[in-house]
Length: 221
Ligand SMILES: Nc1nc2c(ncn2[C@@H]2O[C@H](COP(=O)(O)OP(=O)(O)OP(=O)(O)O)[C@@H](O)[C@H]2O)c(=O)[nH]1
Ligand SMILES: [Zn+2]
Image 1: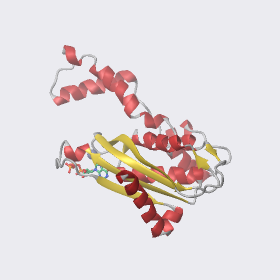
Image 2: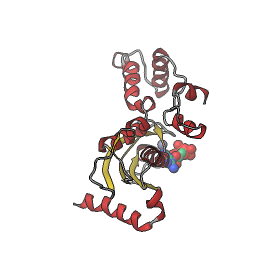
Image 3: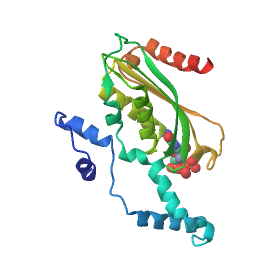
Image 4: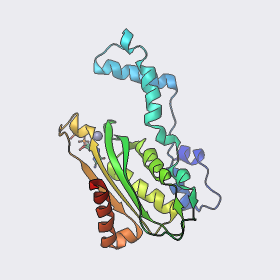
């Protein structure tokens, strides 16, 4: 927790509770050196039963560490910062904004194998809107961390609710977990659906229905 607090200074106006939430938006841990990370990959290669010194694997630890930097780049980026760039000139538009079929690749925190899916994110604006790409960026940042689907769904909704303060947020994620298809129970093609609602979406079931219908309709169309 100390490392987290030090790494991400609070905005001056934030009170203590908000500030804690804000830090958690961008977790930071004490990182090993690149050399230590490469040594860990060599250990795993040996654990898998191969020889890290053979020609084809010589540069693999370096490649794996580089690819981890990309696959887990979400730890170095802040969804709150991305969502902070809002604008108000939308001619009074205050109905649902839905960004659907945002494809993502994540990794499950239990097995560190891929979760591949799509996120559908909607909000009901109150005064201000956010650039559409910023919603997809927020999804991407959370996806590029170790995740459970439930946590990722909640994190996206909370970030949009906290930063944009809209009348409500709806998030639905559908994903395939490779830890269920490649190993373990080995069920290919099963999809997990999660959804979460805040504000008006939470209070009014008809708004939830409208969200789900729009997600489905846009898919069929
Ligand atoms: N709720 C939830 N579970 C997940 C997610 N990703 C993976 N899991 C599950 O996490 C569980 C971990 O179960 P454990 O019994 O601790 O680990 P395991 O022996 O590898 O489990 P099996 O996958 O059943 O072989 C499994 O049931 C996975 O299917 C996720 O995003 N959400
Ligand atoms: Zn898993």
